[in-house]
Length: 234
Ligand SMILES: Nc1ncnc2c1ncn2[C@@H]1O[C@H](COP(=O)(O)OP(=O)(O)OP(=O)(O)O)[C@@H](O)[C@H]1O
Image (tube, rainbow, N blue to C red; front, side, top):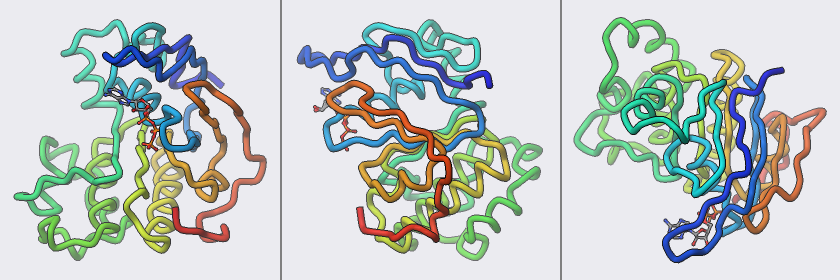
């Protein structure tokens, strides 16, 4: 199958000249759930940021379908991100002064919102809390609102950076199960960074990053569901 994301020889150095990514090659197939697994400091968030276009690599190429996103202008890249790629983070990043509903629909045209809003909020189990502000929601509810905001525009790829990192066991399980459901229902490709080996057991594929390089790359023949795994707190 043709990859939806392909990275070639990615090197990333920061200003202090530390080389954080040391020549990473990988490709991600469409409609897969990939975990990028690694210990703290291994470079997994930096890799996710480079793959999602949030960070430019020092050298190397990142293709989204046939487009080399490292060559796009700022405006072209932000158009691509607005329409086709989404990202969620450990700390949700909801706007405090807006309700859950406003957080989800901000920036959307009415026509596009109508397509899936009711269905999506129902799947995520947030249809009864849409009038609340982020400070009135639990961490798990806030992350589900952030997922709705990311998915409402029907992106092709959803990047998740330690998306369960602030959640307890029960809410982590709910969020991981929902991300799998969203992949299945909407055909979204999910790329999820974590250091949690249990979450990796639910993935189609696990790419282990160690010291800025790909250390292991394994397809799970029989991924477990979020409910099947013997869950442990991160
Ligand atoms: N903006 C930055 N400037 C300088 N160094 C950075 C920057 N971002 C990350 N680093 C360094 O890059 C290395 C990898 O960081 P990264 O956040 O990618 O790791 P990680 O595997 O995601 O870790 P964690 O699980 O703790 O988030 C670390 O040594 C970090 O200090």
